[in-house]
Amino acid sequence: MEHMKNTGINCLLVVWILAAMPLQAQTALPAELAAAYREMPGELVYVHQNTGLLFSGETLYYKLYCLGRSTGKPSSISKIAYVAIVNREREVVFRQKLRLQDGTGQGDFLLPADIPTGSYKLLAYTQWMKNGNGAPVFSSDLMLINPYQEVPQDYLPENRADSITADSLAIQPAKILQPAIPSIPSGTEAFTATLNREGYGRRQKVELELLSPNADAPGGRYSISVRRVPKLKPPPPSDPLAFEEVARKTEVTGAEKEEIFLPELRGELISGKVQTASGSQPVANIPLALSLSGDDFIFDMARTDGQGRFYFNIDLDYEASSGIFQVLGNVKEEEYDLLLDPHTVPDPGPLEFYDFRLDPMLAAEISDRSIRNQIENAYGEVKADTLVKAAQEIPFYRNFQQQIRLDDFTRFNTIMETLVEVVDHVWLDRDAQGDPLFQVRPFDGYLDGIGLPPMVFMDGLFMQNHEDIVSFPARRIKNIFISRDRYQLGANVFQGILAFETFGSDFADSFYRNFLKPETLFKPVPAKTYFYQEYNGSDEKTRIPDFRQQLYWNPGLEIVEAKTNIHWYTSDLPGNYEIRIQGYTATGHPVALHKTFIVE
Image (tube, rainbow, N blue to C red; front, side):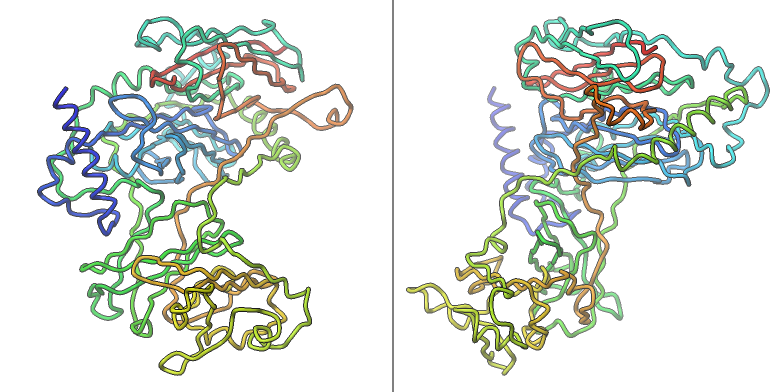
């Protein structure tokens, strides 16, 4: 008991020190923290995917679970996770970054027409797992078929005896999943599932009743996939029960590392280094700013360390696909190179790829499925998924006290005239060097703030030289936002916030200074609410083809009571369908449920 108590104290100590350190993506761990670091909890990642077989034009849906290695409960360490697809040469053909909420994230991937037919691996991990202090990188098999390209020789039959026969590729009767270990400690089932019928017609409602006899099943985290069983034999589906049995027994391999990848404790890490343009020498101790434009723009400031490295922590969703970095202060006019750290996929260890060969007898089935996919994609606009805007606290630099809509007032030609005639508590002054400097009047009692610069933004871009926008045409400005409080960000103190918004919100697209460094970002994917087909008896949708193979996908299945009812609608495709529910109970135990039904 005493050892567990000390371990918990050490974990908290390391997390606190790492959070307080000038962070970067990879750093040297102080020797005095090495022992405590080895005591920090590891993570494991499991992915529930909707299928192991995809054609070009089809979508892979997945739900990612990030867990404490020893508990099975949601990990409190990483707030970001990564998913990648690699081919047999271990080349990355697709990757995504996910924000984690309570240890879970979701994503999807539309298979394009330029990926060759072949066997691939889906990998999933967190940055903290790169240190080897948790379970191995998660991997599962993917069989991708591209009917619009020539099939590589490795996937053609060498001869009839070696090829997959038509019998082995026929529709397989789905079997009930037999877990390798009990789904909960008592050995009883976490759920029992009952359908309202054994067989269904086309475009008919399917009702599923879930009963949860165990108290820890409600309140867990689950995902459900309902999909047609293919005629082509896909790779075996992943199973959280068998996965955890293996993952928890895997020996820790990276505990002796002195250089570590820091966990993304507070959000997304964006890191890199600044070096001289000639000589590639690190530039130490210079201030930087990062602007992510958009209606809900993001702003942060940092400073390089002794090796010229910098770190930004982004804990909010953003719209921009690129960020604008800028060197601040008196050194900004010098020439620097800013290099972002590239994202690397960790070594997953030995990988055995799923072996398959396509028989010519399958040509008709492949052709039919491809035609159905094209028809479905042609009606994509009426079956589109919906982006979910995350509810988040407004950061202080967007929490304005006053908004001035300039069309409500007489228009003036210049910003200076507009400030004088329309805007109270804001004026244009001069700094010690005689350069233009906006001023925002503090509230009564805080007059010592006069003289301090405000934060100034133009369409979300931080403006350190106020003279760059003094002559900007006021007719192009839609709104002016003002805050009069004093703010501190790092070592920087600002008196107020002044933000301009143009009609096109495109100021940064045409603005250039040599100290501005635009960089494309590897950004997290937005969450979605996935399309749900309903038929209510009206004629509204009767003329729209319905060749859905994926009848239902819900990565956020909620089970809050002992009895839960779920429903969906069949499509125009007859055949065998399988229901797979996977996830983790409230106490961290894996659940896997498999059931089939027929559509005639």
